[in-house]
Length: 363
Image (cartoon, rainbow, N blue to C red; front, side, top):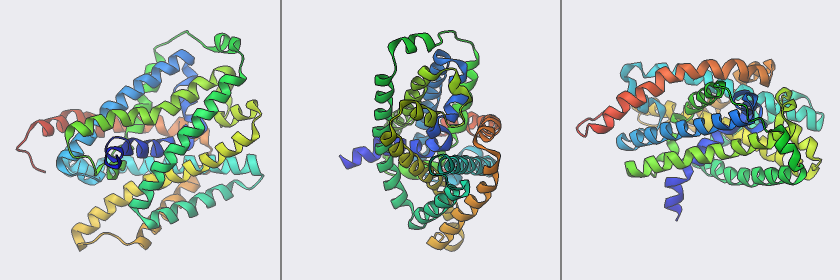
């Protein structure tokens, strides 16, 4: 049973942990790329994003399993050869942006909920991520997988609470059935930049043994990662279109529900999500550094070096966090999406599939 969980559920749970972060977890990212296109248009965008992420995740896991590439450096040597570093340039920009977003969101929650300075949220996150990174891959994998289960429990409870507290007429009046083609752009951009997290979490795919298992794990993983976002989007129906102007939409929804206990529990889980997103992203970077260091010295970096990498990344990100979560998401994610299309997805579905069909190829 444990083996089945590691093969089919663990990669998706880790991907969800990396994706969910400050934008997804607060609902701001979902509003930016889906809800602003209307309730029906946003839902279509989410379905498109889910299918695209499933295809990308399945193909990536199949290639990774075939050639034993469990860090993004090894993986992109298969796709890009000596030009593998082009992905790293985009990835580092993405990781710093994600860390800045979750730092901004954590600071906002600390300030709004507890009256503490925004810097307190960033400081708590910094300490927690450094500690997690110090203890290494096994600890991070276990905690991210366990937290994903807790997240699902809280998300479902929240969604049920919204269903019970809103009148049926609100759903029918606010659900906008008018659909424009713009929803495709939102779904495509969302899939493109979130797909960048897939090579980061390849360390969670070591239990996969066959390409069939890899494909199934990728498809299941995409739905694990996206279902909470779909529930969030649907829950915004009662507050649409006012919800579009909220910096922390889910937080605003909890205020309207007037359920302080559930809200407090959600904030606790959300703050933990910020920590696990930061730890998951940085662990992917550390896996790459360990591979490089092992090639030159015969052993990976030590725990203190891992912690120093984490601290350095978070300090840089904390400077960016001052720009605010809305501006960071609107300006950052959309622009990086097209870079990942050129550097990751086009090579994956051309060179990557070619490698998979050539049995005699060896990296």
